Each structure stands twice: as structure tokens, then as C-alpha cells.
Length: 492
Image (cartoon, rainbow, N blue to C red):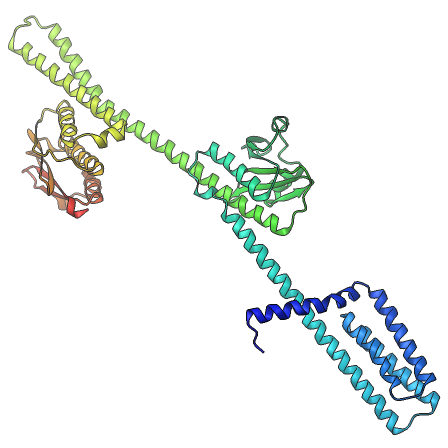
């Protein structure tokens, strides 16, 4: 028989109602045994007092009671053998041991065996029914557990670590229904817990002495790596790849009864919280590394450009101060050099200040940025660098930054490698496309013989491709180098 969902539900409700009486008898085994013994005694007495074939059928009533009320087969079989023996005894006492009565007794034995089989099938069906109910309840519990876990969002948080820890405590309280919560961090010594965040606690409780790392439910949770429920406290460890960060202590005004599902939810939440903490720690490390790298880069830029320009300007100024004739052509040329060096240093400082504020760099006009860049580069080299800007079209911020960085790298190569006498930077554009050219008359190189990691060629090409542009390098030994970058709005 195949039932639909509604039919099965109706039959299940009918079966549940019919099961109540049997369930009541199963809870009162002594009563069942007493009723079975009384039934057997009454049936035997009636069989002796009123000889007849129908009286033996009363033995089936206690057998039926035991078969349905008791799940064990041995009592049912034993009772059936006792009833069969009493029937035979009654027949011998009354002298009814003929063939016909023996057949009737055998028929009664078959009927008793049928009752035993029926009781066995009923008990098996009842056992399967209870397992189905337990499985359904477990599924509902797991579904509720999953829904509860989906409500937490610690892994999606990009909060700083200090704020994240407080958010973890707040969400743990909501998820596990605690009256208060604290998050402790296990210090590197391994035996000291420091309070990092607390929520839902009165002021006096928040100022309680810190617990020892190896004692109480917190210590056992840290040692076992699993939640520990004790009295009115639930301790949830925070562990990522065998690295113990700390433990969450959830406090309750009344000691609750924690189920395995509650502990499973606590374990899952602890794993999520530990991953979120690890992500926050890694993010902060990356940010600190990025800041340190940027500071190192700016320090190198200051040393390589501004410091050297100012040093050269100071030497020139000292030489001019000691010159015997302050009106000579050499003195005037020296003054022009000092002016060029100081202007270059100022341009370099403006450029570095812009780079320290990425937003300002992206919002500036590319022509203005190139002007500062050329002036700053000119101060560091004897190469004459000319700038031509014919583009008045505003560019997207990422394109502006990419073209500026490419020009910066190309001019650095002019200063460091080219040995050029003259160099140029040209920016031209229209409503359709923009072209940036940086060229020099230096010694050039063979692009096929230079690896992509040298001269920053790979970085320049990647910057151009990142904004949908193209980069070409035209160079030949002894004939200089030309770097051309093209960008079109239609290629983005």
C-alpha cells in the first residue's frame, strides 16, 4: 500500500491514539503480569468447574495481553506453554483425552502462536513508528539548529578585532539564550586569561577577578577543545587550526538543561567565531604590512629624490657663497641650478603628499600630475625632459592613477638606465581615446633580451591591462626607448 503524505498523517494520528492504552500498560508492567496471572488462574478454574471446549479459549486473553503489552518474546512464549500445559492437565483430570479434544487443543496452540506472531509484528511496527518519530524530531531539531546558526553573521563581518570580539559575545548570547557573556583571550604564556569583551553583565560581575586558564569549565573547555556546561555556565573554546585564541563564557541566572543539540550549536558557533577572529587578525596584519611597506617606499623616495635634491642645492649654495665674483656667469648659472633643484624638490614633495592621499591622487587631473612628476624627475638628472599635454578630457579615477604610475615607472627608467640627453612625455587625447608617450634618446635595449621582471615592464603592462588599455615598448640598442600607452573608453 502506498500512502500519500496526508493519508500517512491521518493513519499516524489514529495509530498514536490506539497506542496510548498499550503505552499505559507498558508503563505498568507489574499490573500486566498480575492481570495475566489472574487471567490464567480464572481460565484454569473455569476449565475445571465447567468442562467445555469454549472455556479453553479464555487462555488466549492473557496471552493476547502479554503479547501486546510486553515487547519481550520470552514471557509470551513461556505463558503460552503454561496455558497449554494447564489445558492438558484439565483434560487429563476430567478424562477428556480423546482425539477430538487433542485436535482442539492443538488448534488453540496454533491460535496462541498466531497471537504471539501478531504481538511480535505489532511491537516491531511500534518500534519502527517510534524510530520514525525520533528521526522526525531529530530532523526538526537539526533544522532549527541550522536556522539558528544562519542568523549569526560573524563570518561576514569586517569589523576591527576589538569590535568583532564584542559582536561575537552579543551574538552568542542571542543564539544560546544566556543572561550574560564574556570573551577571554589566552595569552601566549598559556596560563593567563584576559577579558576582551563582555555583554549583559552587571557592573560588579564584569569586574570579577579573572579566572585561571586551567581551572573550572573554562579550563576544561580549553583542554578538551569542546563546549563544557557546568552549573550556570557554558564555556565555548575558540580554536583555529590547533591555535587556541580563547574561550567564551556564557552565564545564566538559572542553570539550564543543555541538550546535545545545544552543545552542537555552541560548537558550530565557536568554530565560526574562531574563523572570524583569525580573518580579522590576518586582515590587521596585512594592513600593518601594507602601511609599513608604504612607509618604506616613501622613505626611499624621500632619500632618493628630495634629500638628494636638497643636498645638491645646499652644496651649490655653499659654493656660490664662497665665490669671489657674485656677478659672474658661473655664479648666475649656479643660481639657476639652485632654483632648478629647489623647484624639483618642491615638486617631489607635492607628488609624495599626493601619493600619501590616494583619494587626492585619483581626483587630480592627469596633466597636472605629469607636470609635478616631470619637474620632480628633472631635479634628479641632467637629462632635459619636456612635457606636452594636449588632453583636457577628464578620465576615470583608476585610469588616471594607472597612467600616472606607468609614466612614473618609465621616467624612473630614463633616470636610472637610459643615459639619455633628452626625454619627453606627451599626453594627447580626444573623446574617443587617450595616448601617453614617454620617450628618450638614450642607449636603448633589446626587449627580447630583457626579462619581464626587469625595468618594471611587467608591472607597467599589468597596470595598463587592468584598466583596459594597451602598452607598447619600442626600443633598440643605441636608438633610445619609447613607451606608448593607449586607452579607449570602448575597451573597458
